[in-house]
Length: 212
Figure 1 (cartoon, one colour):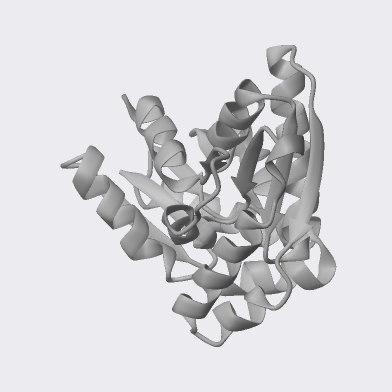
Figure 2 (figure 1 turned 30 degrees about the vertical axis):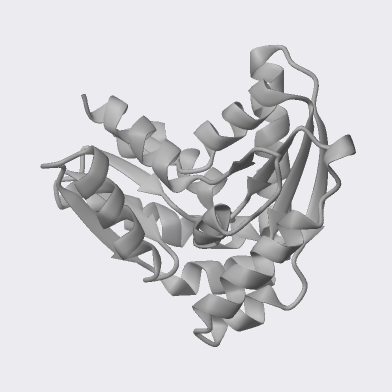
């Protein structure tokens, strides 16, 4: 069983659909803890480390042989507990970051929540160092989008993200990273010629390789 640690229920159908498309028969357990992101946004990701560890311990006790954290804000915190909990603990955005720096050094990280920037920028830079590649990482906050997400206006949220992505100049950018899994639907709504990367499909595929 692969456990998925979510901070929003909107991710459940996304990963179920990816499972049905690419990994038929894979058993998923969805663990939804919205409070973790609320606290991480207010106090920083490290503030929820103890709670994340408790969730991971319970997942393992319930039979998980790997855990995929789908929240980019707390993914690094979860990943750091892998050795202690005794099963692979993966962050969904690591394969995306690796793919981005492989395209080119000029990466724009797009997010709707400021708490995401620190962990995601650090991850992109880490993956660049690991691959021996340069990285020039910039950020773009999509103003007002998070309020739409919280209000349940998914259509407005996705449209706002897509518009922001399309505003990024192509002559100074190699790849665009959608830092939060919730932004994934915007990937199909953009018109830019630049590569736009999202994390769910890549992250789930990486988790499956650990199961195998």
